[in-house]
Each structure stands twice: as C-alpha cells, then as structure tokens.
Amino acid sequence: MNISSANVTVVSQYRDSFTKAVSKNVIVVVLGILINYINAGLIHTFCKHQIFYMNPRYILFIHLVVNDMIQVTLTLIMFIISYILYKINVSICCTFILFVVFTTENTPLNLACMAVECYIAICFPLRHVQICTIKRTLMLIGLIWTISMSSALSDLFITLATQPLDFHSQVFCLRQTVFPNPLIIKKRDITYSVFLVIVWITLFYIYFKILLTAKTCCKDAKKARNTILLHGFQLLLCMASYAAPQLTDTLQKLSPKNYTDFLFASYIIVQILPRSISPFIYGLRDNTFNKYLKRYLLCKVP
Image (cartoon, rainbow, N blue to C red; front, side, top):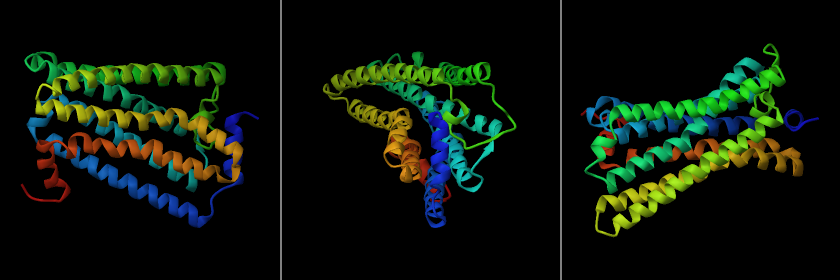
C-alpha cells in the first residue's frame, strides 16, 4: 500500500463526527468568504480608478490578489466536497489540483517580481518609468503563468505516460492521489527548491539594497523596506505548503485518529493565512489605495 492510498484509508476510517465536520466547514467558509470579500473590494477599487491600472506596481499586486482568490475559492470547494461527497470524479479532481498548483507556484514568483519593482522604484527612481512599463508588466505576468503551468502540466503528462488515469473513477481528491508517481514528488521538490532559492536570494538582495538607501533619509525607502519584510513573511507561510505533505504524513503515522485534524490545521495555515496577508501589503498600508478601498468595503458613495 503506497502513501496516498494509506492516507485515504485513514481518512475513511477516522472520519469526523457530524458536529466537528460542521464546525470545520463553517470556519473555513467564513474565512474564505471574508478573504474573497476583501479581495473583491480590492479588484473593484483597482478597476474603477485609472491611477491603479496604469501603474505596474498595482498591476502586479492585483494579479497576486486574483491569484489568491482563485486558490482560496478552489481549495474551499475541495474542502467542502471532501466532507459532502467524499469522493469525486478523477477528471474534476485533476482540474482542481492543477489550478491550485498553478496559483501556488505563481505566488513566490509574483512576490519576487513585486520586490524587484519596489527596488527599481527606490534605487533607480529616474529610470523606473522606462524600465517598469505596462507592457513589460503584462509580459512578466504571462511569463509567471507560463513557468507555473509548465511545471504543473508536466505532472499530468508524466502520470498519463506512466500510470494512465481512469477518468471515470471516483477518488478522494488529494494531489498525491491523482499524481502518485514518485518521480513527480522528486520533480516537485526540486522545482520548489529552485523557486524558493531564487526568490529568497532576490528578496535578501533587494532588502539590503533598500536598507542602505533608507539610511540616506528616504522615507519611501523605509516603507519599501517594511514591504519587503512583509513579502518575506508571506513567502515563509507559502513555504509551509512545500513541507505540509511530508509533515502531515509523519503526523498521520504517529496519530492516525487525528489525521483529519492535521489536514484541517494544514489547510488553515498553508492555504488561508498566506492569502490573508495580501490585502495588507498595498490594500491597507498604501494610503492611495486605502482611501478608495474604504468607500467600497463600507458601501460609501464617493
């Protein structure tokens, strides 16, 4: 019995009581709706004002917000389905998993791009307009999706080549259930490691460069330094998604009766918490964005 089938067996054997299942789903739904409501306000504010959608910084930010909304919505649906239907069609599960992987791998790359834009704005202010154009920003977003899609779709191709999926079968929807090939796990670990090393080097380099600039008196540089720190903290939370499968498998072996609780805690920490930080980075800390955002969140007429 491989790890994925063992996990499914444990989940089916130690399913939550009705009260616990309802409590978990209520918590998840409330958090998901709250995050998506705030993010929807951010998107609405962005689309309504030219000052935002003509600025590369806000374009990258709103791409991160849209990315977060997609991930929160899909993982929320998958969480609820796991309790109501338990098993779903393989093709539907595969679609969900692929889009979740796309958005998961987009996040660190998007954070790195936002940090680079911040670095250019602070350290090369006179060249910022020439370097950070709308066209280049949109091309950068396209590159981010191309990289993440290439990485995730390769999992599907490897599975179809080595272990064809039965698209009419019903499965408990987990990534390791749909893509069980050990080669995929090794590739995933290597890919994530490369992503994280590149992003961390970028963040550290930019942080210290901005730190030097901040010492020279620039008020914007000090705020940018704090923004980079927030990016770093968000990246730390995103990194939890890479360690979560191994950790939950280890905890499942130690205490199989609490495996569903471990999955719930992992979902909150790995999927919900990192997505709750994005609105604070620019949405609430940025004076311009905050001024317009309050009107829509509080339903005020301009």
